[in-house]
Image 1 (spheres, rainbow, N blue to C red):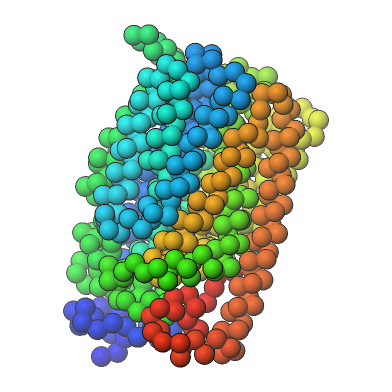
Image 2 (image 1 turned 60 degrees about the vertical axis):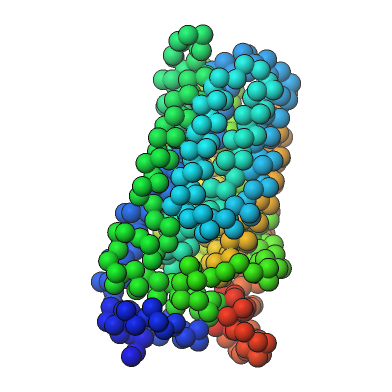
Length: 493
């Protein structure tokens, strides 16, 4: 039976008993385009929208403290000095520590339960956050919010990599990640209305947490009933489509896995060592660190930056909407183009250059409208770069547990940037915030350097494999344990 027949939907039941050969190049397989598109379309409509909702609510619950700040939180809890920045920082301590073990747990628990369960947890904590009366209560609530949210982003990247081939992945990451800038726009509008509520002694800012947290809990409960664990368990697919969905992922692994599907893979400590020692993990983790610093500071302090231009709190909330909407559309455009050209580095470099222009506009003495215009360039540049760098590493690590370790580690390292980002915009630097803008500009330059280095390394290593210089690895023993080291596996640039 030919492999072409398998992927054209014929004799699919035989595939359950027979694993596809590792050495078979994916490009040599003749797939049924209509069947392939139908599977992808079903995943697009039955998986991605739920992840979009998860990430939208996660980012709203994470960054709404910035909205609450200008609606009375600072005054009511007496957040003088650097107390507000410390409250922001506490969130990231558990967020960083939980990333890798959370990725390991995702397949065991079942992604369809695990990811919505995280949402229910942090939604509950967000509701409690609205009831805090002291600085200590704020710190405690922020800690548990970080604990609940810590496994989400890495888990969603890992989850999508079970369903989509490597160069179909980034656009789908973009489809859910564009919820991040959208959350800034939607969150600003929602906060504007909620901050007008005065009821039973809870005035203005608590209602931002009460309502947005309750929405998260309800959405999480709903998602549990619809999100599949793996392609083989996707109820939206027919039996034939499930088998072909698994087969195409096996072939896309390019020899990196000796298992027919992700459910057959088991945790092994060598995967951990290989993930940590891969140059892609090192370079792209540092790159994500460089990118996420301006993303976090932009998301958390955009209302503060705009209000420093002389606008009232209501206008500042509303003026956060347009730049975030610009970022939303740029994520869609950037991720789509990246998958089309099958490259990540150029998209990141262009994004960083746009954001650099934005920070320069904020730094130069100019009319407030020029400064406000700079926020559009920043949003347009940094938001597309974040999913690009995550997909870049996910593309270059395989199989499942190796990718789970690498992506979890990448996000853990990157989120250490929060300890910088939360202190980039201090009250003593208002209203120009020259130090904060300069720090973010410097990290964007670092990202360009790291992106260029990673592209050159991938080109060099792919050349080695194309010339047969890595074929000696086939004699090392179990080829299924080679993972991304397999000679026919190619890195994405």
